[in-house]
Amino acid sequence: MKMPKFVPQEKRFFEMMEKEAENLYSASKVFADMFDSFSGMEEKLSIINKMEHEGDVIVHDIFDDLNKTFITPIDREDIAAIASEMDNVLDLIDEVAEEAVLFKIESPNPHLVRFSKKLRDAVGEIHLAVKKMRNLKNAIEIKRHCIRINELEHEMDIATINAYAQLFESADAIKILKLKELYTNLEDAMDNCEDVADVIMGLLIKYA
Image (cartoon, rainbow, N blue to C red; front, side, top):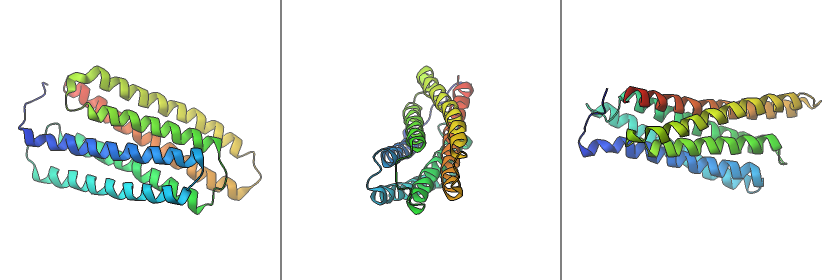
C-alpha cells in the first residue's frame, strides 16, 4: 500500500502528535532530573503536573479532530493509538512523581535514577521517531528509533528484576511497598513506550 497524497491542512495531525511527543519528552527530562539531583522535588512535581495537563489537552484536541475529519494522513486508529500510548506514559510519569513526593522518598535511590534515565531515553527515541513520521521514506531511521526503544525496554526488565531482588532483602515492609509501587509504575511506563514503538513499526509495514 502506497502512502496516499493529502491536502496540506491534514498535516495538523502530525503537528499535534509532534507537539505531544515534545511535551512528553520535556516531562521525562524533568522527571529524570528529579531523581538524579533529588532536589526541588515539589517544584519539579509541579512542572510535571502542568505538562501532564498540557498533554491531556493535546490528546483531547487530537481525538476531537479525528471525530471531525473524514480523511487522515495515516489510519485514524494508528493516530489514536500513538496519542493514547504517549498519554499513558505521561500519566505514569506524573503518577510516579506524585508518589515520590507523597511517600517522602528522602534520599537518592540508584534504581530510580537508572529507571528514570532509561525512560527518558526511550521517550527521546519516541520524540525523534514521531518527528520523522511526516515522511515515511525515513523508514530506516524511524525503525532504528523503535528498535532502540525495544532494547531499552529489555534493559529495564533486567534491571527491574535485580531491583526487586535487592528490595526484598530489606526487612522494612513500608519501604518495600513504597518502592515496589514506584518500580512497577516505571516498568509499566516503559512498556507503554514499547507499545508506541510497536504501532509505529506497524505503520512502516503498512505503508512500505
